Amino acid sequence: MDFRQLRYFVALYEEGHVGRAAERLSLSQPALSQQIRQLEQNLDVSLFQRSGKRLLPTLAAHTLYSHALPLLDGLERAREALRGFRGQSPRSLAIGVLQTVNAALVPMLLERLREAQPQLVVQIYELSGLDIERRLLTGNLDIGIGFLPPRQPGLHSQLLYEDELQLVIPDEHPLKEFKKVSLGQAAELPMLLLGEEFRVRQIWQEQLALLGRRPHVQAELNHMAGILDSLPHTRLATVLPGRARQMHANQHLLWKPLSEPRVPLKVGLVFRDAQRQQATLELLRSLLEGVVQKEMLL
Image (cartoon, rainbow, N blue to C red; front, side, top):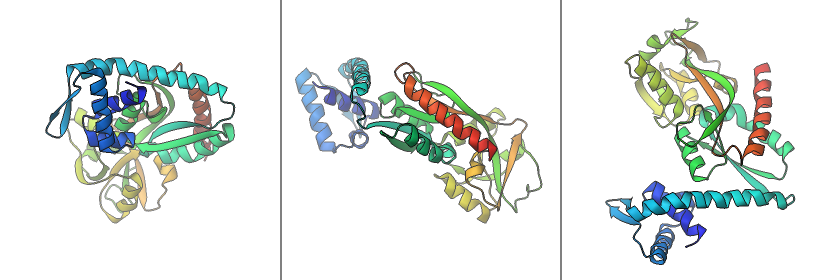
């Protein structure tokens, strides 16, 4: 048994499907299956049982998983500790960011990171909130930027800025003269929304549920820019973070604050280990605070 096989096992255990685990590991399915069989032979135990298209972990697998996570985490800690001895050798920083906050932060963040840490290789992944948190827990991301608080146990956060959900409508919409729109009024509107895997959509549904309502979904798109490009050609509405307006200005769209009640949003850094990641967190926080302050002046 080696650390590589342990990492393969953890991915298969968490995904429960050879195809998804192989994709996550950037590995072929036959190669992954072979490594798992070798691990089972070395340990002389059966780790998975097939049930339809899914793999069900055995009791031995549950036991191995509980021991594998701290081992892999310890290995990553050791690697992190040794990076300080590599001089100016390139190192990487993997950041997961929500699509709905990406455009407002990432472009300026990348340039500031390049200036502050020219040897750093930055990898940006635009992901849903669930994917960010899952990849943080499995060690495939270093830092996440998303809505707070995180929902998965074992994750921590630091606030960067506050925002609020706003209604976005085409300039010929019946509510075009309204300065504000109540949550109850917005609940009646046919909408073009992001898919249910997106945190903005989930927050919207949670707010309506408090009123005993459900969103009136007329259409869905999986990209915010596509929604904003499509809205002027419809009579539909959507809901998005207010700060997104700065990066997606369109003269044919109107942004209306929501009221009764307003829907506050908190955006921040999400991470797993504050002690180990302290230097990275302080760097990102200082750079992102500069980005946020600059945006507020625009």
